Length: 83
Length: 83
Image (cartoon, rainbow over all chains, first blue to last red; front, side, top):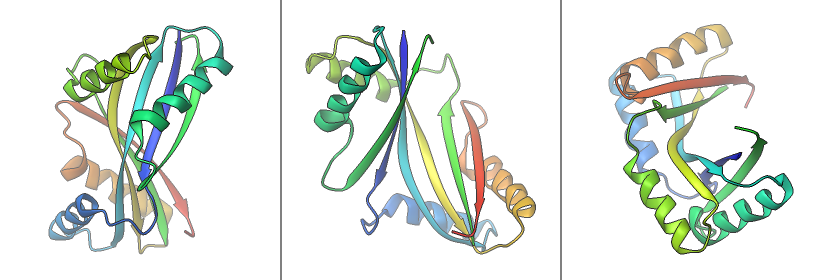
């Protein structure tokens, strides 16, 4: 079993309305020191595979085809064996 | 300026309908080796603060009060200076 941890973030400069809303809520709660806040996704994917190199290729394909929108998002991932 | 990176995940055992939907979509695209998929949030928070220890306390308070639902979620975070 192999576990991949994928992080998908909005590209710099892309508006993050969700992040803006959370920032405003934090200000309302008195956390005025928050100057900016960006929200992204983290995905843990368990793969019934044994070869980490092959798993990395497959995870990259998953990101390119479905998990990340290349127009507005960037992705990064790591792969761990034996989980 | 201090940057905190916060990761919020569903607790083990808590149903993740979004993760299930993405897993099914990956299967449809031919990624049958995906046995499980869990989705969480990652937040980058920029703080106009200088003391990392104090920043850590504030970020913990933000998580407890707003950013993570303690009933179904766990959170972890790291703090970096000078960003």
